[in-house]
Image 1 (cartoon, rainbow, N blue to C red):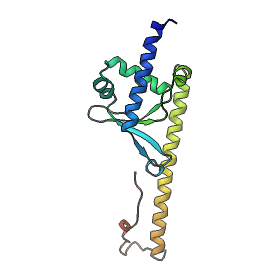
Image 2 (cartoon, rainbow, N blue to C red; image 1 turned 120 degrees about the horizontal axis):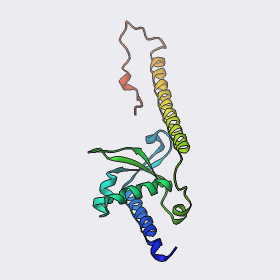
Image 3 (cartoon, rainbow, N blue to C red; image 1 turned 180 degrees about the horizontal axis):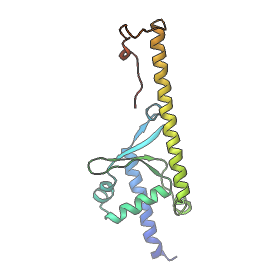
Image 4 (cartoon, one colour; image 1 turned 90 degrees about the vertical axis):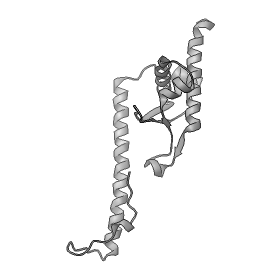
Amino acid sequence: MTETEDQPVAQNFRNCVEVYKIMASEADVLSAQQTGSVPMTVWEGFTTKLIVERMGLSVPYYSSIRRELIRMGCIKQLRRGGGTSPSQWELLREPTEELWHNAPAKRTYASSMQDAAAQQIADIIRRLSRLEENFDVLVRAVAEHGGNVPFDEPKPNVHQYEVISE
């Protein structure tokens, strides 16, 4: 390729780097306790506004930048936004030239289904962990009341115990 043919690719890569830098500078780092699994860096906002308004790029750039960041494994969408609702993205790794050149060109349907199944399993594990923690809280509450709480007597004040919720 000639130098002029490489320029659009190089510019698109630079745009990806700049978008990621902005997202990283505004992201929150969530602990494993907050996420229910592992620590993660999460950016929440309006991706279209970031690319179109703040960076001054046209709408077609939004799609290509988002697609390339996903392709390189730099970001993963946690929650889809729309209207007045911001989207939420996990920041996985900074874009590099190596990722740009070596990441798979397109995800297959099978790999997308595997990712979806893996995410569902992770969500179920997180929910099960919270249920187990809440069960332990309830067992402690019953134990503190002699292990026998008749239904016709006043129930213990369960609000004094820490119940974990989503």
